[in-house]
Length: 301
Image (cartoon, rainbow, N blue to C red; front, side):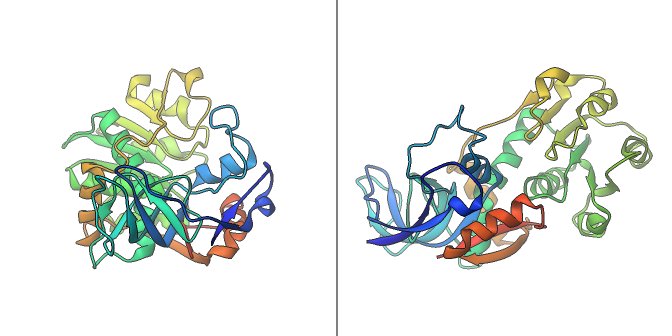
Protein backbone atom coordinates (compact mmCIF):
# COMPACT_ATOMS: atom_id res chain seq x y z
CA UNK A 1 0.00 0.00 0.00
CA UNK A 2 1.00 3.63 -0.48
CA UNK A 3 -0.23 7.06 0.58
CA UNK A 4 -2.23 9.42 -1.62
CA UNK A 5 -4.40 12.48 -1.04
CA UNK A 6 -8.00 11.83 -2.03
CA UNK A 7 -11.46 13.33 -1.65
CA UNK A 8 -14.80 11.51 -1.59
CA UNK A 9 -17.12 14.50 -1.83
CA UNK A 10 -17.02 17.98 -3.28
CA UNK A 11 -16.24 20.78 -0.88
CA UNK A 12 -13.65 23.03 0.74
CA UNK A 13 -9.97 22.11 0.96
CA UNK A 14 -10.74 20.12 4.13
CA UNK A 15 -12.22 17.31 2.03
CA UNK A 16 -8.65 16.44 0.98
CA UNK A 17 -7.46 13.62 3.22
CA UNK A 18 -4.49 11.20 3.27
CA UNK A 19 -5.58 7.70 2.25
CA UNK A 20 -3.98 4.28 1.91
CA UNK A 21 -4.21 3.14 -1.71
CA UNK A 22 -2.70 0.43 -3.88
CA UNK A 23 0.06 1.73 -6.16
CA UNK A 24 -1.32 2.00 -9.72
CA UNK A 25 -0.13 -0.52 -12.29
CA UNK A 26 1.18 0.84 -15.61
CA UNK A 27 -0.65 -0.16 -18.76
CA UNK A 28 0.73 -0.27 -22.31
CA UNK A 29 2.83 2.79 -23.03
CA UNK A 30 2.70 3.97 -19.42
CA UNK A 31 5.29 4.25 -16.68
CA UNK A 32 4.79 4.40 -12.95
CA UNK A 33 6.90 6.91 -11.09
CA UNK A 34 7.84 7.33 -7.48
CA UNK A 35 6.69 10.93 -7.24
CA UNK A 36 9.29 13.46 -6.18
CA UNK A 37 7.13 16.54 -6.84
CA UNK A 38 3.51 17.17 -7.86
CA UNK A 39 2.28 20.54 -9.06
CA UNK A 40 -0.93 22.13 -7.74
CA UNK A 41 -2.97 23.75 -10.53
CA UNK A 42 -6.06 25.98 -10.39
CA UNK A 43 -8.05 23.26 -12.16
CA UNK A 44 -7.40 20.96 -9.18
CA UNK A 45 -9.25 23.42 -6.97
CA UNK A 46 -12.18 23.70 -9.36
CA UNK A 47 -12.55 19.93 -9.63
CA UNK A 48 -12.36 19.48 -5.86
CA UNK A 49 -14.95 22.17 -5.18
CA UNK A 50 -17.43 20.76 -7.73
CA UNK A 51 -17.24 23.73 -10.09
CA UNK A 52 -16.30 21.36 -12.91
CA UNK A 53 -18.80 18.64 -12.06
CA UNK A 54 -20.76 19.24 -15.24
CA UNK A 55 -17.65 18.98 -17.43
CA UNK A 56 -15.39 16.65 -15.46
CA UNK A 57 -17.68 14.52 -13.26
CA UNK A 58 -15.88 12.87 -10.37
CA UNK A 59 -15.74 9.15 -9.71
CA UNK A 60 -15.08 9.10 -6.01
CA UNK A 61 -12.66 8.69 -4.40
CA UNK A 62 -10.59 11.09 -6.49
CA UNK A 63 -6.83 11.59 -6.35
CA UNK A 64 -6.23 15.14 -7.66
CA UNK A 65 -3.32 16.33 -9.72
CA UNK A 66 -2.49 16.84 -13.39
CA UNK A 67 1.28 16.58 -13.55
CA UNK A 68 4.30 15.27 -11.66
CA UNK A 69 8.00 14.53 -11.79
CA UNK A 70 9.70 11.48 -10.35
CA UNK A 71 11.74 8.32 -10.88
CA UNK A 72 10.39 5.45 -12.97
CA UNK A 73 9.89 2.29 -10.89
CA UNK A 74 7.68 0.22 -13.22
CA UNK A 75 7.01 0.24 -16.96
CA UNK A 76 4.25 -1.00 -19.23
CA UNK A 77 4.75 -2.56 -22.63
CA UNK A 78 6.10 -0.04 -25.11
CA UNK A 79 6.77 2.61 -22.47
CA UNK A 80 9.13 5.38 -23.48
CA UNK A 81 11.38 5.13 -20.44
CA UNK A 82 13.23 2.62 -18.25
CA UNK A 83 13.23 1.86 -14.53
CA UNK A 84 15.43 4.41 -12.78
CA UNK A 85 14.90 7.22 -15.29
CA UNK A 86 14.09 10.71 -13.99
CA UNK A 87 11.02 11.93 -15.88
CA UNK A 88 8.11 14.35 -15.83
CA UNK A 89 4.79 14.64 -17.57
CA UNK A 90 1.02 14.66 -17.45
CA UNK A 91 -0.45 12.07 -15.11
CA UNK A 92 -3.29 9.61 -15.55
CA UNK A 93 -5.31 9.07 -12.37
CA UNK A 94 -3.86 11.92 -10.31
CA UNK A 95 -0.48 12.99 -8.95
CA UNK A 96 -1.09 13.77 -5.25
CA UNK A 97 0.49 10.57 -4.01
CA UNK A 98 3.64 8.56 -3.57
CA UNK A 99 3.12 6.97 -7.00
CA UNK A 100 1.61 8.17 -10.28
CA UNK A 101 1.21 7.04 -13.88
CA UNK A 102 2.56 8.97 -16.88
CA UNK A 103 1.44 8.20 -20.42
CA UNK A 104 4.32 9.78 -22.36
CA UNK A 105 7.14 10.64 -19.97
CA UNK A 106 9.71 13.27 -20.90
CA UNK A 107 13.25 12.97 -19.58
CA UNK A 108 14.15 15.36 -16.75
CA UNK A 109 17.61 16.91 -17.10
CA UNK A 110 19.80 16.91 -13.99
CA UNK A 111 19.89 20.72 -14.12
CA UNK A 112 16.11 20.96 -13.69
CA UNK A 113 14.99 20.83 -10.02
CA UNK A 114 12.15 18.45 -9.17
CA UNK A 115 9.76 21.19 -8.08
CA UNK A 116 10.32 23.19 -11.26
CA UNK A 117 9.98 20.07 -13.41
CA UNK A 118 6.58 19.25 -11.99
CA UNK A 119 5.46 22.87 -12.33
CA UNK A 120 6.22 23.15 -16.01
CA UNK A 121 3.78 20.73 -17.61
CA UNK A 122 0.25 22.19 -17.48
CA UNK A 123 1.15 25.87 -17.30
CA UNK A 124 3.88 25.66 -19.92
CA UNK A 125 1.79 23.78 -22.43
CA UNK A 126 -1.19 26.06 -21.83
CA UNK A 127 0.96 29.09 -22.57
CA UNK A 128 2.40 27.51 -25.71
CA UNK A 129 -1.04 26.40 -26.92
CA UNK A 130 -2.60 29.86 -26.65
CA UNK A 131 0.34 31.56 -28.37
CA UNK A 132 -0.19 29.11 -31.24
CA UNK A 133 -3.92 29.83 -31.32
CA UNK A 134 -3.19 33.55 -31.53
CA UNK A 135 -0.51 32.89 -34.18
CA UNK A 136 1.87 35.24 -32.38
CA UNK A 137 4.80 36.21 -34.58
CA UNK A 138 8.02 38.19 -34.40
CA UNK A 139 7.50 41.92 -34.77
CA UNK A 140 4.00 41.87 -33.30
CA UNK A 141 2.81 43.28 -29.98
CA UNK A 142 1.09 40.94 -27.51
CA UNK A 143 -0.82 42.02 -24.42
CA UNK A 144 -0.84 39.45 -21.60
CA UNK A 145 -3.30 39.97 -18.76
CA UNK A 146 -2.13 38.35 -15.55
CA UNK A 147 1.45 38.28 -16.81
CA UNK A 148 2.90 37.51 -13.38
CA UNK A 149 0.75 34.41 -12.92
CA UNK A 150 1.98 30.89 -13.55
CA UNK A 151 0.71 30.74 -17.15
CA UNK A 152 1.08 34.41 -18.02
CA UNK A 153 4.72 34.66 -17.03
CA UNK A 154 5.64 31.68 -19.23
CA UNK A 155 3.62 33.05 -22.16
CA UNK A 156 5.42 36.38 -21.80
CA UNK A 157 8.85 34.74 -21.86
CA UNK A 158 8.07 32.49 -24.83
CA UNK A 159 6.75 35.45 -26.80
CA UNK A 160 9.74 37.66 -25.96
CA UNK A 161 12.06 34.87 -27.11
CA UNK A 162 10.24 34.89 -30.48
CA UNK A 163 10.90 38.58 -31.02
CA UNK A 164 7.47 39.75 -29.89
CA UNK A 165 6.92 42.97 -27.96
CA UNK A 166 5.07 41.91 -24.82
CA UNK A 167 3.04 44.22 -22.62
CA UNK A 168 1.89 42.57 -19.41
CA UNK A 169 -0.62 43.71 -16.78
CA UNK A 170 0.55 42.88 -13.25
CA UNK A 171 0.31 44.05 -9.67
CA UNK A 172 2.64 46.84 -8.59
CA UNK A 173 4.85 44.38 -6.70
CA UNK A 174 5.48 42.34 -9.87
CA UNK A 175 6.42 45.15 -12.27
CA UNK A 176 10.16 44.78 -11.73
CA UNK A 177 10.04 40.98 -11.97
CA UNK A 178 8.26 41.05 -15.34
CA UNK A 179 10.50 43.82 -16.67
CA UNK A 180 13.63 41.77 -15.96
CA UNK A 181 12.19 39.04 -18.21
CA UNK A 182 12.06 41.41 -21.17
CA UNK A 183 8.43 42.50 -21.13
CA UNK A 184 6.86 45.93 -20.69
CA UNK A 185 4.96 45.85 -17.40
CA UNK A 186 1.96 48.01 -16.56
CA UNK A 187 -0.19 47.87 -13.45
CA UNK A 188 -3.68 46.42 -13.71
CA UNK A 189 -6.81 48.05 -12.36
CA UNK A 190 -8.56 51.29 -13.31
CA UNK A 191 -6.81 53.03 -16.15
CA UNK A 192 -5.03 49.95 -17.49
CA UNK A 193 -6.16 50.66 -21.06
CA UNK A 194 -4.49 54.07 -21.08
CA UNK A 195 -1.33 52.61 -19.55
CA UNK A 196 -1.18 49.89 -22.22
CA UNK A 197 -1.65 52.46 -24.99
CA UNK A 198 1.17 54.54 -23.54
CA UNK A 199 3.46 51.51 -23.32
CA UNK A 200 2.56 50.34 -26.85
CA UNK A 201 1.73 53.39 -29.00
CA UNK A 202 2.13 51.16 -32.05
CA UNK A 203 -1.00 49.29 -31.01
CA UNK A 204 -1.76 45.76 -29.80
CA UNK A 205 -1.95 42.87 -32.27
CA UNK A 206 -3.35 40.22 -29.95
CA UNK A 207 -4.38 39.65 -26.33
CA UNK A 208 -3.87 36.64 -24.07
CA UNK A 209 -6.11 36.89 -21.00
CA UNK A 210 -4.79 34.69 -18.19
CA UNK A 211 -6.44 36.77 -15.47
CA UNK A 212 -10.21 36.45 -15.84
CA UNK A 213 -10.44 39.96 -14.42
CA UNK A 214 -13.23 41.28 -16.63
CA UNK A 215 -10.92 42.77 -19.26
CA UNK A 216 -12.35 41.22 -22.42
CA UNK A 217 -14.50 44.09 -23.70
CA UNK A 218 -11.65 46.60 -23.52
CA UNK A 219 -9.22 44.03 -24.95
CA UNK A 220 -11.43 43.56 -28.00
CA UNK A 221 -11.59 47.33 -28.39
CA UNK A 222 -7.78 47.53 -28.26
CA UNK A 223 -7.29 44.99 -31.05
CA UNK A 224 -10.43 45.87 -33.02
CA UNK A 225 -11.27 42.19 -33.51
CA UNK A 226 -12.58 39.62 -31.00
CA UNK A 227 -10.75 36.89 -32.96
CA UNK A 228 -7.48 38.40 -31.76
CA UNK A 229 -8.33 37.83 -28.09
CA UNK A 230 -8.13 34.48 -26.26
CA UNK A 231 -8.89 33.81 -22.60
CA UNK A 232 -8.21 30.83 -20.36
CA UNK A 233 -9.89 32.34 -17.33
CA UNK A 234 -13.03 34.36 -18.15
CA UNK A 235 -16.22 32.31 -18.49
CA UNK A 236 -17.92 35.34 -20.11
CA UNK A 237 -15.84 34.85 -23.25
CA UNK A 238 -18.75 33.96 -25.54
CA UNK A 239 -20.59 37.14 -24.58
CA UNK A 240 -17.74 39.14 -26.09
CA UNK A 241 -17.18 36.85 -29.08
CA UNK A 242 -13.86 35.78 -27.60
CA UNK A 243 -12.39 32.28 -27.76
CA UNK A 244 -12.13 30.37 -24.48
CA UNK A 245 -9.12 28.08 -24.73
CA UNK A 246 -9.23 24.86 -22.74
CA UNK A 247 -7.50 21.50 -22.88
CA UNK A 248 -3.92 20.40 -22.49
CA UNK A 249 -2.99 20.24 -26.16
CA UNK A 250 0.22 18.30 -26.71
CA UNK A 251 0.61 17.56 -23.00
CA UNK A 252 3.62 15.29 -23.23
CA UNK A 253 5.15 15.35 -26.70
CA UNK A 254 7.61 17.55 -28.53
CA UNK A 255 6.24 20.79 -27.07
CA UNK A 256 6.94 19.66 -23.51
CA UNK A 257 10.44 18.45 -24.38
CA UNK A 258 11.17 21.88 -25.87
CA UNK A 259 9.92 23.65 -22.74
CA UNK A 260 11.98 21.35 -20.53
CA UNK A 261 15.09 22.14 -22.53
CA UNK A 262 14.51 25.87 -22.23
CA UNK A 263 13.93 25.67 -18.48
CA UNK A 264 16.99 23.49 -17.91
CA UNK A 265 19.30 25.90 -19.77
CA UNK A 266 17.95 29.09 -18.19
CA UNK A 267 15.92 30.17 -21.20
CA UNK A 268 12.66 29.93 -19.28
CA UNK A 269 11.94 30.86 -15.67
CA UNK A 270 9.20 28.89 -13.89
CA UNK A 271 8.51 30.58 -10.54
CA UNK A 272 7.89 28.17 -7.65
CA UNK A 273 6.32 30.04 -4.76
CA UNK A 274 6.21 27.36 -2.07
CA UNK A 275 6.57 23.62 -1.50
CA UNK A 276 4.42 21.60 0.91
CA UNK A 277 4.60 18.10 2.34
CA UNK A 278 2.06 15.82 0.66
CA UNK A 279 -0.01 15.72 3.87
CA UNK A 280 -0.51 19.51 3.62
CA UNK A 281 -2.32 19.45 0.27
CA UNK A 282 -5.38 21.05 1.88
CA UNK A 283 -3.26 23.99 3.03
CA UNK A 284 -1.85 24.40 -0.47
CA UNK A 285 -5.37 24.51 -1.90
CA UNK A 286 -6.44 27.05 0.73
CA UNK A 287 -3.46 29.28 -0.02
CA UNK A 288 -4.22 29.25 -3.76
CA UNK A 289 -7.91 29.94 -3.19
CA UNK A 290 -6.95 32.96 -1.07
CA UNK A 291 -4.59 34.14 -3.84
CA UNK A 292 -1.63 34.18 -1.46
CA UNK A 293 0.73 32.63 -4.00
CA UNK A 294 3.09 34.38 -6.39
CA UNK A 295 4.04 31.38 -8.47
CA UNK A 296 3.50 27.65 -8.35
CA UNK A 297 2.65 25.58 -5.28
CA UNK A 298 4.20 22.12 -5.25
CA UNK A 299 3.62 19.01 -3.13
CA UNK A 300 6.63 16.94 -2.09
CA UNK A 301 5.65 13.34 -1.17
